[in-house]
Image (cartoon, rainbow, N blue to C red; front, side, top):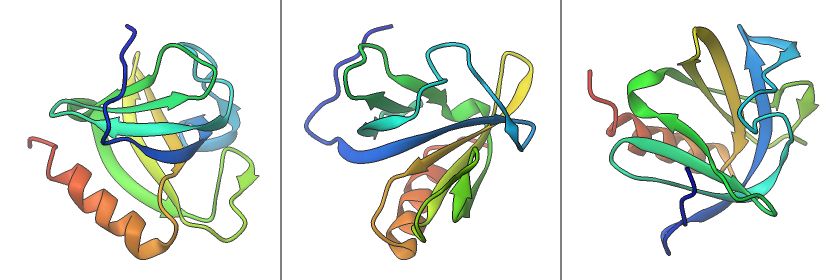
Amino acid sequence: MRLKPDINTKTGLYLGSEIYGKWWKRYTRDNMLARGNGRYWNDEKTFYFLRYLTRDPISIPFEDIKVFKTGKWHSGKWALGHTVLKIVWNKNGLLLSSGFLAAKNKSDTEILISELKNRIKN
């Protein structure tokens, strides 16, 4: 599924996806192993992250998201004191936690979480 982001993308960093919250168990399928810088955006149904030099974005459907969390590290990587956005979601029968540096500070990360929560239909 190749998508091109629109002008409303923002820069960020993908830190990886943990399986069942275990930093040493990383999800490696579906082009999700490699960490990296890129751009993120969302539409009404999905959050996307496209790493630079890749063609297909990581896509997280809002209907599969269970909870949003924050922290200072993810998937064995410390974020140098920055706030990490952690999206906990179901994929292929597994509970994943995907980590992103998506904002410059904690308050901006909280604003992003609030915007994403508004997209989730309960």
